[in-house]
Length: 157
Ligand SMILES: CC(C)(COP(=O)(O)OP(=O)(O)OC[C@H]1O[C@@H](n2cnc3c(N)ncnc32)[C@H](O)[C@@H]1OP(=O)(O)O)[C@@H](O)C(=O)NCCC(=O)NCCS
Image (cartoon, rainbow, N blue to C red; front, side):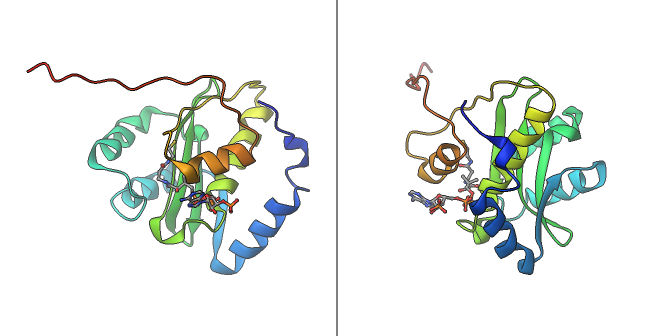
């Protein structure tokens, strides 16, 4: 992954996104034990994940809070990203009502910065071929497609 995170705090788009989001009360930072609970509550709201994903996150309580970055608006979670210790991006979502305002980009950049600080050298992820908003933010963060695969299924019962 080619990503100059050294420039994160000087990156003009990131800075202007932060400036735009600040009057809305939106802040992006690493999760804590207490606001992780707010994340779980938020999953029932406008983060747009289905029941199965919500259950997966509940099971992921064991997943270390330090691997989650949250976008918060006051005490409400309006976006999150989860990463693995190995640099895998495990999930990202933003509030349906607040999309295309840069929250996704900020979450992704913050997560990459966090991983880089820990010495992780390669970040990886998979995304849907038609998930254009996700592809857009990954592209902006410097991710490039390094392989592709088909998702196959066959009804057997
Ligand atoms: C992917 C997701 C996290 C992006 O969050 P977001 O807060 O809208 O992200 P941003 O506002 O930072 O950026 C979205 C970008 O997609 C662009 N975009 C939005 N809809 C688009 C579309 N239909 N086609 C192409 N680009 C699109 C926006 O213009 C913006 O890019 P730009 O500001 O550089 O022009 C959000 O759409 C989401 O939660 N999706 C559902 C969960 C999901 O699919 N997660 C990814 C799994 S791999």
